[in-house]
Amino acid sequence: IGHYHGDQIPEFVRGASYINVSDEAGFDALFRRVRQVWRERVPRKGVFISYAHKDDQHWLDTLLSHLSLLQRQHGIEIWTDRNIEVGARWHETIQSELDRAKVAVLLVSPDFLASNYIANDELPKMLQAAESEGMTIFWIPLRPSAYKHSPIAAFQSAHSPARPLSGLSDPDLDQAFVDIGEKLAKTIGIPTG
Image 1 (cartoon, one colour):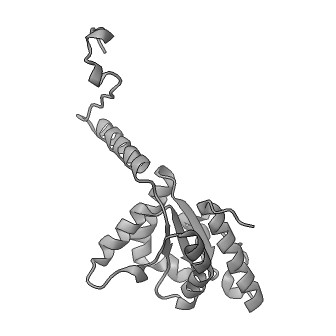
Image 2 (cartoon, rainbow, N blue to C red):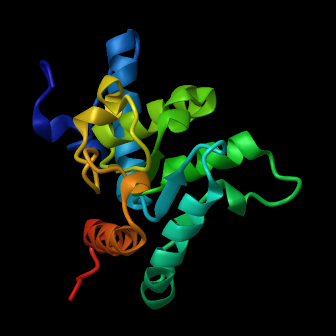
Image 3 (tube, rainbow, N blue to C red):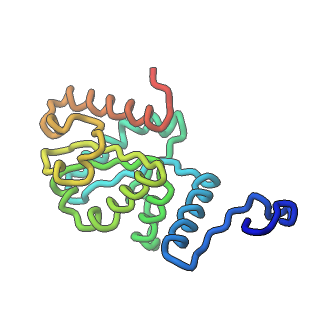
């Protein structure tokens, strides 16, 4: 307040914050505060599924099948790039969905890790949102990969990377997907029986 007395400050501005934006640190502080207020008013929700198109689409189809009951019974929003409408700008749509998702499900494989789009346009945004906005990184090892050299190694996987899904028998694979679905439900806040 400086040399002013508190009673000299008009009531409508008492308690207001002052941020000096004349330097980069001040501008960054303002930007963080604006994002914080935005997230309080528009909280993240829903699930964004990231996968490599080079991987067998059976993995995504199977996961979606196992999650369909959660969608139907609990109204969980699950988004993949298959939801992009004809004529929509696909990059902007993906970025917008990343901005609003609460959970990012990553179907990790060598092709996932090799994807330039995932590495440059999706993963950095997810990692930043996990760091500053509470996004949950929920990754599933599809096939053996060099994930240990990736930033996702810092996050707990939804299934043991020592036994990727590709190496499981059909009954074990079904059980793994059931377990993954229950973990995702818990992560989202849905009680499981």
